[in-house]
Amino acid sequence: MSYAIISVGGKQYRVREGERLTVDRLAHGEGKTFQPTVLLVGGNGETRISPTDVTVTARVVANTLGEKIRIGKYKAKSGYRKHTGFRASLTQIEIESIGAAKRAPAKKQDEAKPKAEAAAPAEERVKGMPSGYEELTVAEIKTASAEWNRPMLEAAVEYERAHAKRKGALAALESALEAKEG
Image (cartoon, rainbow, N blue to C red; front, side, top):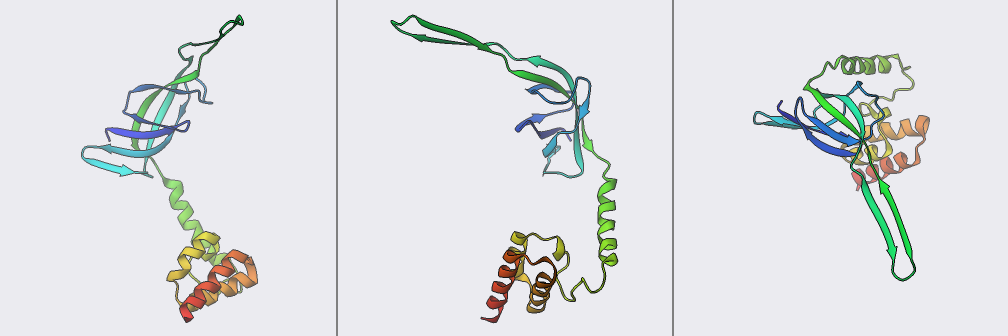
């Protein structure tokens, strides 16, 4: 990849390998490496937004101060004069590499989910319930329930009444059931 757009300290920067840039002060010490959030990777005619398999490695070169800004206040006829200054705390970083990362832990998480479902007692699982329902938030249930069929909705309502008892989820499921009837 020839370039990447990263997010450091709430700001976005377009970077290339070997490039040095000055950003707001970071908590990392001098000489330490870190991996900022990658928002976009592009080059060679290919552009990917929010890639999960690409990381950017950056090294802190030095902590520096920015250019001095002088501030002067003055009020006419009263003799009031006040002068202050400001120098921003900055960090100079160097982009060491833009490339693929080793993502072995992600596979382990995918394998752990079926094992957790198999370990759950049969009485806790309701037959006909949508897959992965237990991990859904109330907002996700509200949007997804429109696509579920009647047996799935009934199973989800039964599960909510028996275990979770989330009022928002119950209301969303019951309104989806009414919509299926009408």
